[in-house]
Amino acid sequence: MPHFLDFEKPLAALEGQIEELRRLSDNGDLNIAEEVGKLEDKVDRQLRQTYGKLSAWQKVQVARHPARPKCGDYVSGLITEFVPLAGDRLYAEDNALVAGMGRYHGRPVIVLGQEKGNDTESRIHHNFGMARPEGYRKAQRLMDLANRFDLPILSFVDTSGAYPGVGAEERGQSEAIARAIQASLGLQVPFVSVIIGEGGSGGAVAIATANTVLMMEHAVYSVISPEGCASILWRDGARAQDAAEALKITAQDLAELKLIDGIVAEPLGGAHREPDVAVGAVDAALNEALRAMDGMDGPALQAQRREKFLNLGSAGLA
Amino acid sequence: MSWLNEFVRPKIRALVGKKDVPDNLWHKCPACEQMLFHRELSDNLHVCHACGHHLRLAAKERMGFLFDGGEFTRVEFQSVTPDPLKFRDSKRYTDRLKDAQSKSGEKEAIVVGHGTIGGQGAVIAAFDFGFMGGSMGQAVGEGLLAAAREAVTRNAALIAIPASGGARMQEGMLSLIQMPRTVLAVEQVREAGLPYIVILTDPTTGGVSASFAMLGDIQIAEPGATIGFAGKRVIKDTIREELPEGFQTAESLREHGMVDMVVPRGEMQATIARVLNLLREGRGASVETPIALAAPDAASGMAPDSAHGD
Ligand SMILES: [Zn+2]
View 1 (cartoon, rainbow over the protein chains, first blue to last red):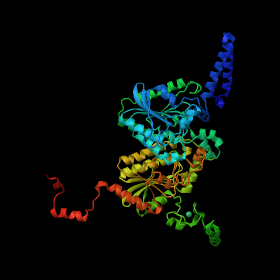
View 2 (cartoon, protein in one colour):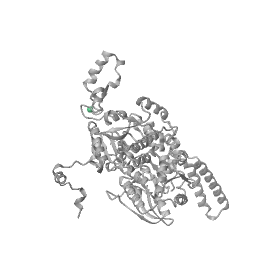
View 3 (cartoon, protein in one colour):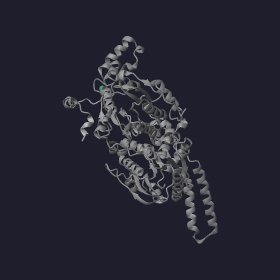
View 4 (cartoon, rainbow over the protein chains, first blue to last red):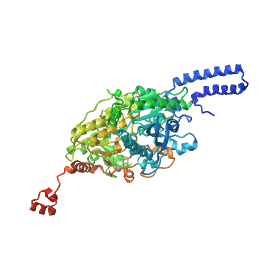
């Protein structure tokens, strides 16, 4: 049973009809086939209409869609010979932050990403994609590994934020994130990040301080969740829609503010409708981003990344 | 409620008339509720006489008691577009900014100054919590980058004094990217071989704590300061349990290995001076010659190298 978002409800009705008709048309009735075709066109038009002008809040829903491809889908679709690597060597393994090495189009790479999981069991296993300090320290460890063995880094960002827990705080969540950013800025290898779903605040930046930061067409990237912002600034969590608009969290807004380097187009109706197509689109964008850095040496890569962040948002400089 | 508030204050008001006594003559200690007279309070570096609570302090006052002789020169930094997102919640962001500016007398939530501490050149970048909760937006990022540049140019130490709830939401992602930008500021100071000291004050949370504020060569915290990443309410809502006593305080961070020391405000200047002197002298220090051991060497008149002679 597919999951329909609130604003997709009209589609749900249409697709229900199509399914019904298909069941009836087992005997190859031409009239029914024609009717199905018409309905499919209608679905297509509606998708184009709805998804062509999603509001920021609707994009938040799409970015959090349970069937949206997750970090693991990109890893299994794009990385061969994947070797998961675990542990921060200090305290624990963090299953929210997936890490490992493998080959991307033949070239060895280090992979980082937050995994939200796709059913109750895996969601709990991955702590809903909310990493603890250990996850960020594991990321630092692998960044160091990448640097020493000259391996490009790919990161798949998808988190509502770093985990807000007592132990996480006591073990230095802030410090772990700060050091991950510091390690990112010290890298002498190509580093490409893709915000595949939710880019939630500091917990996302920790693995997204990259040479090239790409965003999926309907992903969001924000300093705070719209709900959190609404409850603080509007003193009313129900104003999340207004907060989502005001915060400018969509790929389109962030590209305009020059805070991201590119947008990856999603299949019609969002990545959750055709996960394979979405993975393919990310593949093409990643490949292009990496190729653009071929021939750049370590110091040049580091300098490019630093210059970029120094100048980021300078459009806003008076 | 203390007797001062109940009794003395109305009496003084009756004597001199309400308008002549500005409200800020008396401050109530947020910890013990003692009423504190403003002059005594500022003489005591805004630490409560009664309970030792460290009250929040404006950036320029911090500079006043940290720099030698209270002397410092302000470092100006590049101004930014005041409201890049045209943000509006219950109020316009531009109005909030104007309010904060007229209330604090500062242009932004950070003040940068240079001077000396214990004779060592230092640049201080201090936050004003009173300015929109010390939140970090583009201007604060520029302030930290300017402070780092100034430190490198002057071959001086950088001292960051955060007092901030975190990112400036009204600047959206432009505020979040100040995390890597301020880390870059720290990197520039490190790469120049200069000391970077952080004094964590109440409160240091969110994106500020998860960037430049946790990267000091020496991490110092003021007593009782709240320091953490996630807000207490968010954590409580997530774990649905009471938080342990002393959670996210300076003292608990020291216990968990996240800061080097918790230093009362009254000892801060001397502590920073000592740390800077130790770090900056390095191996270039003029080593005092221990008298007992020095005597034979001096008597024989041997060149230091001759010990390796054959
Ligand atoms: Zn007190």
